[in-house]
Length: 399
Image (tube, rainbow, N blue to C red; front, side, top):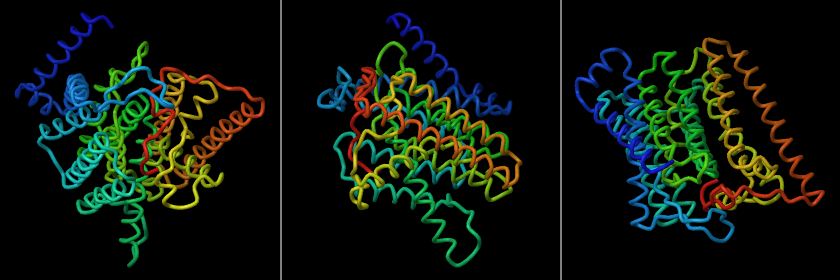
């Protein structure tokens, strides 16, 4: 995009943000019952405006992802995109002036995760320390009542729900981090997930879950034009601060929500919406354990590899942008499947989940089969030069 057009867009977005700051404008949005529209517009405009600033700060501080080794991007790229998303998200929630106890818990836990990721971007941290802090953030959720609550009543149910909550939140947090391997993948996927959480919140009358979801959605949409450009590589990356923040926020929103009268529906709807990170984490774990690459918890925590869902799509020749768009389409399909379950029975939910499981099994089998065929005939699939370093090399961390 020519510089003149970029300036026009920047000035237009700045004008929208300034108009939305005018108290009568905000009050009118709130009074008309379309608060969520205000939050969406304001968060997206703030994230769009904050991203160039984050990029400049990253250049000044030297927080860059530099090419070299197995990395294929050709120029150093800033890593503080997550800061722009977090600033927009936090500012919108504060200016919304409407909080619940659970909303505060998700916001505080996500803030701790963001700080952890920011420190890790500046100075890489050991996996055990990151896991410990992530569990501390889960403790914040539990303290504020954001806990999975589908187990039958019993003396063991509380402890069991705490353990399941920790597994869910830590798993989704790190799964989203490892999906940050192609330009626009993690951000766009988080935006799709947040959009479906917003729709469910509006359908079921859960305003506080909706406030979190729509603020996250807008922040991702404002950042996405800088991170997923059709004719140029990304000008800035999320970094661990951004990807883990997105994962934790989505996991917290899923736990916070009330999804249906059936306990099975309560489980299935958020699982479907977050089906991509769940599938990716499950596939990589099973393959690593099954092939003997991982033999202990310590190895599982520190293992790095080029075997995630998006890596496998690249290896069968899809190319960077087509791989991202393919994952987007699957995420939308899963979200629509979740919306169908509104007001349904446990049997309906089980059937939809079984259908999704079968399709994911076929996708995984097809990808692995094609990879084996390439290996058998000795064919090397050229890698897409537009993908950034996380395509080929994960940072050591919790997997």
